[in-house]
Image (cartoon, rainbow, N blue to C red):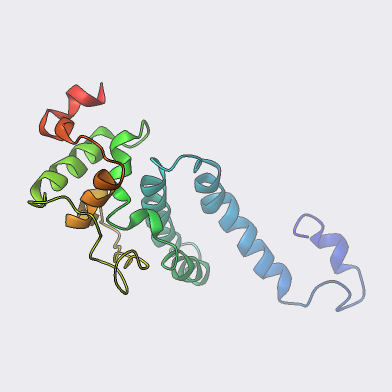
Length: 176
């Protein structure tokens, strides 16, 4: 519709669009081209998802300088879908090939700082009991993945029955 905007404008008023729709469509197309499509096209792996979601969040905050209304609406929607940024999922980035090494190191350091005495068999930061919906984190423009780590972050290792000994070694050694 945006590509055919000039032809559509020649049609009788109200045939296809209202007078405000072309501008809204242009805003949406600009947003998709500049922000959303990049992260949508590169989100094919769960181990990369926390990084992509955090980068998308930061891009949306920055996009407020271009279009505050679209940025606000997109952030509101994203705040309802922070599954990969909840504390149990962030450790997946330890196995990503695209997350910067400094971020992986920070996640590993934070994990070791909050290591619980016992295995985490049920996450605690949930609505309800047991495996209820996770409480999504509060993200700000300076948030890093390691900032989202807490004792529930150890749940994924318990769930997958993973040996976490590698975390006690230099990150460069196990990143390769």
